[in-house]
Length: 228
Image (cartoon, rainbow, N blue to C red; front, side, top):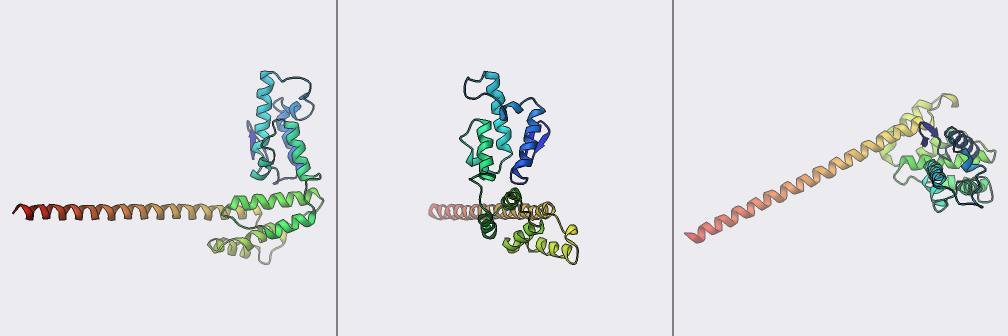
């Protein structure tokens, strides 16, 4: 999520393209920058130094509201209007995936070591479905996440199942709450792994130090025997 001096812009993909664009326009308008994504003349004259700074701010604001995949697709584009055109084509035009392609992507999605990345990918897929007029039930996202996660997240997945058991869909755990619970476990696992690595290093250093002392003691003893 990008921020324009306190105004939050959702990550494209966690909202539909149209929702994202409206919020982006309003955020830029609040700071007098909306012309750079609507009707600024990029073709017939060179921007002034002040305008170049404003254009850079707009580009930065847009890029900060993109996931890594979308960000890479517009990395070389410096014109804000062309960035938006490229993103629109990616989400709504000829560059957009068909519904069967999106479903195949949904089916094949995997956990690659990052809870945030997993939810970001799924939210983008759900958003692209919505742009096509197809609204998937929200619990589809959590069920997919639960299906692809390794056993270290089993306790959180079990608590999700219990929380939803026998309840109407409106009372199921939200994807945001589920993500936050999983992120907590992910952070704890990372801390434990780091602590284990540190303990191992300290143990190795201690063993090496003891071995060095024994070698030194043996050397001193040998010298003493030779002197006698």
